[in-house]
Image 1: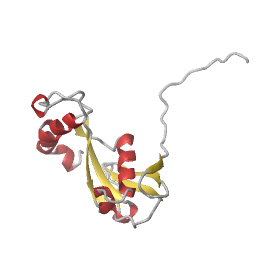
Image 2: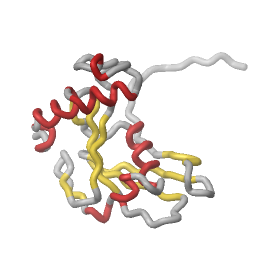
Image 3: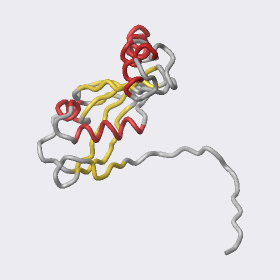
Length: 165
């Protein structure tokens, strides 16, 4: 069963196929003017739009309950003109960085204490929780590193022959 927001085709259409996506396609230099940014974008993957919220209790798409204390921020991402079933890694990195940088909306939503220079940001997404490690520079104004662990799935099985050196 799809989560309620995935079934809201009107909401997705309003965000992805109408003014929001058109406006941001001009900002990403896909189109030079808003007049040229009609429904034909550079790619259906551009732009990716994230909707963020403060932590709250929710149930994942697989039925697992997530408590608000287990996450720092919530996100739903529109990608390829539909709601992403989790969140693209590129979006997770950007969001985690924004959570730790003072003055950003994600920082305010997450309620991170001032002066924190390093933290693992727990991002709640429709299918669970992703953790991204973020480190700021000593001034706390720029990202010095980001990282996350990911599981891998087998995409090929075979043999590799390497000649002796």
